[in-house]
Image 1 (spheres, helix red, strand yellow):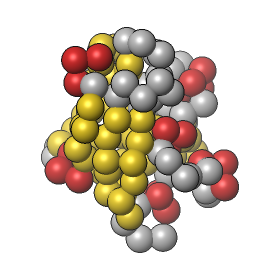
Image 2: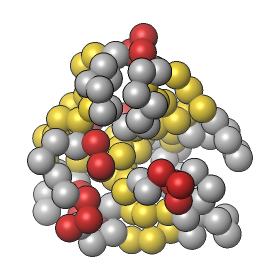
Image 3: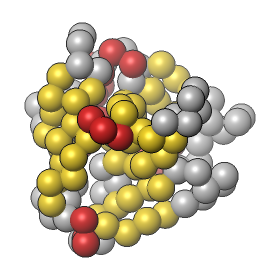
Length: 119
């Protein structure tokens, strides 16, 4: 799969975005947050992401190392993306909750598992 253009949103639609992402490299994680949320993640450069609505309807949560800016909708509570820096080179990136992308079945993707509980 190559990089494609996707539309994403929270459940109620108050927060929406567009992103160009490659879903060949999705990740599942068992950290205390991802495990509970059942998130399937895809990562993209921040420049490939555009928040199209709902900036004022976002609230932030940081935990553990506080490096990731988990953003979720104040209305429905869904975290559809998070901002952070790439651990490889420090460049700005976005972590996309693939469950929030239109027309994508995240359970049909082959995801790499990251042991966030041990990190």
